[in-house]
Image (cartoon, rainbow over all chains, first blue to last red):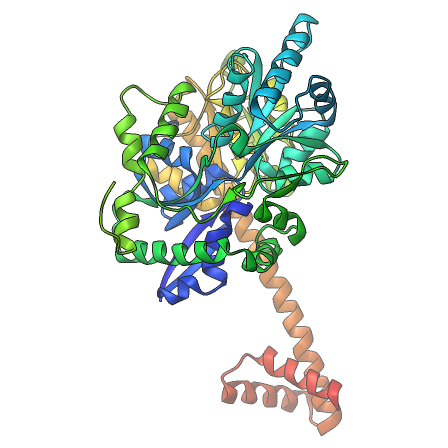
Length: 345
Length: 194
């Protein structure tokens, strides 16, 4: 058995990785897969860069940032497997939700939410009140780019008209309760936790902003990405992803994810995300989206890399001429080779 | 950095460890050291404090907040970057191994920063060692209590002297290739059953 230590942040979208370790898919490939829980994305990056981890559950834009050495020592990473697409949502404080509701902003559709948000932000500016503050989970994150998309749709300048800060997922709900932020974009289960605690209202499910948004990848140091154990890991994850995607396994999956050593949360809250049926407000309103969190769309496609490039470039996060470098992170070839598929675009 | 004196903020939910780091930095001639609680309003606190160097424990989720500080100069007036000395990967490696990281205001001399990071790493390692030794001492004490109890049972039930009871425990442990405390625990469990 080859031992592989793989870092993850306790979120629902670590499901495929955790299932691979806990339900025998890794062992079937001859791997002793050890998921190691981490408290920050910075730790995930550093421990991958300095060799504490063999691979990691990682924000796709962070895999790009680490490869390009944005704000850190560069280590070229390979992302041969999507652990998930989607799964994020935008939640706003109850007071902001009430203001948006008065302007028809709670329909769950982007144009309505954006129009209402733009109107509220302009009213605040006219009244001399401070800019609205929204939180994402990391500077280089799909969450930050989804928020920017919402701001632009609202006619707001993401650099000037709103304040975009970083708050770690476990602190999100508290920050909303204490009024430190007016809203946030975060992955499951934290939107549901905010609703359950009567602190927030889910404004938009991720697909309402960007359909099938690139989210977490399996990140492997590029120089070891072609090794046999990396291919075995891809196969184990693919089998785990198929298992995770079957509705009959959802309850078992929610239970294992909820265990104290993983997410340490009630399985019922996690199950809502897996079912794609989210309670969006304390009044019990449920919004459904069967594709809310996709765990089984794992093959890296060039279009996803291009979407990330555009989003990161629009945020001013990328140096000139880095499109090819961004594309090179997403290794469709390794995915295809590991699963014995013919090479192709 | 007023009047050339470097100020350091230590972010750590473990108050005892933060104090040990603080003492170390003061002893190294850095008078301005503040311990900042690991709370959701960290960014606002740091903006008020305006430290030159932030030392943060790797077990703090707030590390990701500091990652933002060097991207968003609008929020923090002085850009802050992670301590990345490309010529000295060993310092970074030692810091990650010790469970600590540092963020630094632009323009500070790398040698000064390295001295601070080295001190933080030393103190984090010393604290881990202390904790480990404390755990070992606790375990040793608990083990001795278990062995004493088993010895007492052997003396009472088999009429052995203390020395003979101890010798019997030790011989059995050696024969069974187990630790004495395991044999002692087995005796206690058996005695509770009968």
